[in-house]
Amino acid sequence: MTGGDSPTGPERFQLLFVCTANICRSPMAAELTRLRCEAAARSGDVIVGSAGTHGHDGAGIDPGAAAVLRLRGGRTTGFSARTLTESLLAAADLVLTAERRHRAAAAALHPRSHARVFTILEFARLTRQVPPDRLSGESVAARARSLVREAARMRGTCPPGPPDEDIADPYRGPAEGYHACAAAIEEGLDLPLRRILSEPPPPR
Image (cartoon, rainbow, N blue to C red; front, side, top):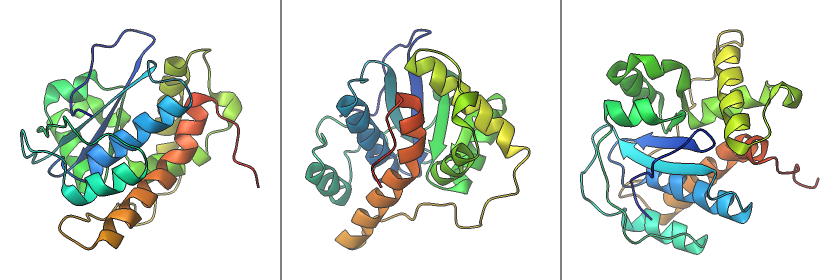
């Protein structure tokens, strides 16, 4: 598990998660996404990374977050936290943040990325408003970029989201808080990843 990214080509989609220190929520979201892509045999199509608005550069993942990821089969070694930069934002096809304040910080740092920056829960809400037949492209990267464009369009036409579209920070809290955080991330990412990876809906 790393905080870095690999070079991407036109058929690879770069997804960046952002929180405050880049030791809890954003690396959890990145690793949970990596696991999901791996399970769908799409690991090479989506490049996942993370950063923090006030990153603890070089720090390892928080122990509570690591414990939750290990229970889900995730990797927790080799991670190195980093601070969010303009170049990271410019390179990302989609930036998903834990909280609205992180979204605002990213947009302020690199204003041209505004249409590609959402909170995790905001992107989930907007994805629900996008008809599946509006997504175009045969590849994962093409569908993902199409979903980002449609979500940005929906942002301008849908009513504002609820004031609680933030994922709470579990840092230094009880284990239950880390589990709740992981569950909120997984729930928020479920539909967008199903759309991007072309997975069938879960059985009812």
